Image 1 (cartoon, protein in one colour):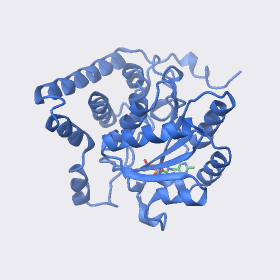
Image 2: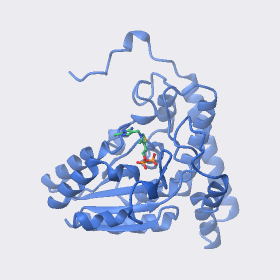
Image 3: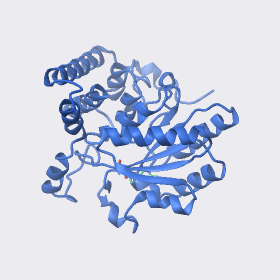
Length: 310
Ligand SMILES: Cc1ncc(C[n+]2csc(CCOP(=O)(O)OP(=O)(O)O)c2C)c(N)n1
């Protein structure tokens, strides 16, 4: 899990450089600071359990074991990227890793996730679906409609809300009176819980427990992971809505630093081993960037291919 967290962190630090160099077209939302949610959740489910991501989705993709080279190529618009360079940051899906994809429409993935969970139920398999959502999306209409229907149909669906405290520049307290997003469970008769989303062990244990309940037909579930995005909302954000002190405070809860310390203090790995894991992640991201840079841009003649389904 430590390696995957480093993969996400270094992938996005590389992406930040591409943003600064103007090589990322369109916008891009960084996940830095939220890594424990994706990695803990993905390790708690099975490889063939589906996930649905959202606009801040690089971490979900990487945690679900997407190919870093194809991801990097996609982000800088190269023809051998996941969407042949036409989708960019917010449209990577990867059926090989059971990832139904990211989505630029806030809350847009929820209906897709409910459909996948309904499929599992009708096929009578014991698969579970995790739908990652942001706190902002839980006030959208689609959230209420989907969680209600999922509850009525007992779907094996985990709504995992990454509460990073803001929806763009709006603090959570200005978008809901509730102290806990998980309290929305009461309106739909589902199970819900709030956890420390920056503590990967808590995330892993919680998702594992509720995934098993979903497999027994006791879903859906609403999990709220309290977390923080250490970067701005997207590519362009002057961040005047929050103080530097607040960001510094949250850095104290950096999920990677905490997990690294936990592993070393518990004697599970040594300092040297942790350093090796980090160095390998850096090397893997450098290789992904080199692959992406050496890749060709798509030919202009392909501009209209794969855009519409036949
Ligand atoms: C339906 C819809 N409304 C508004 C937007 C513009 N928008 C993009 S991201 C965002 C904030 C989403 O906040 P949250 O769900 O908390 O996720 P976070 O960005 O904090 O990870 C908004 C309003 C959009 N893309 N889609």
